[in-house]
Image (cartoon, rainbow, N blue to C red; front, side, top):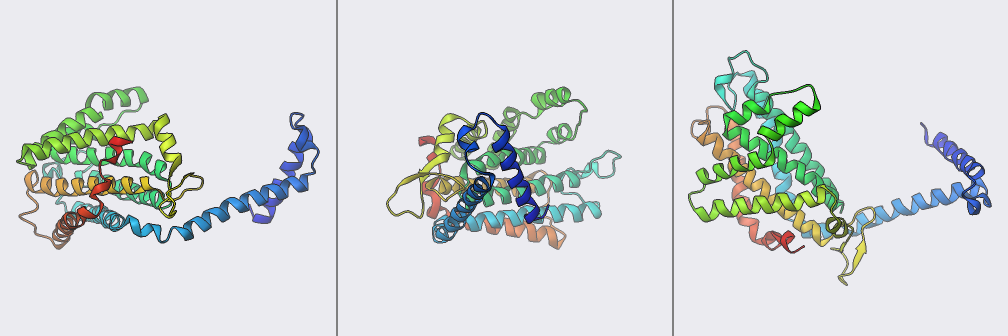
Length: 328
């Protein structure tokens, strides 16, 4: 519908509602043209506020570095994994569970990895867009989905039984839910991840801390995904990053807040954990890191290690924002 035609329909709707709805006596006293002009003015004010807010936040975005850069780096790695999985599928040398390649059983492991990596990259991109625009609550809801996809990917990379269970499909919702609840629920996946951490990290303090952090993160994100009262209030009122007086305002249309720093720092931490663990599993479970024969795989592993190294170097710049959720 063209813009001019849309305006005509909008004006016609104002006229019809103003004439027909007996419950709006004040509105009935005004003509449709005035109602239409008021509505246009309201829309113009709202979107003008959003444009002005985004101009003001150009300096505030600097406070979100280096988290933004690290997350963009991670997005590239997920997309690189999509390409790598596709090429390995064509060459019949899959990243995971190579013994399945010659079996007549869809889907192939490379296709599964390709789909999961694409979802991880796309979801992280969406989260980054939302968080960068100051829509932090909405970003945290997607963050929960991102963690579930990421955890599942690591679990099926480490445990062949999880892979076998993951690719099972059912036609009915009840059967699908029962299958998921019995074999792929967060509790089951967390148990697999805890075992992975124990195998990768020799120090008990490290894998016990990762387990604790995982539990806290999941509980925290669940509050936002399920719309708890406290999470709704926190996401609506927060301190502006670009206001000097430290004032709290209601978030309409999105603006960067102090909470945005916490969200992005947790995102960076999770992506460091995911990339570190995935590379370790390629080595320990699939013998790919030490015997790399193709340039694409070598390039992917190399950039993963660069990301990990960069994370360690920049961690002091945003470490203070980690674990703030426990105090919210």
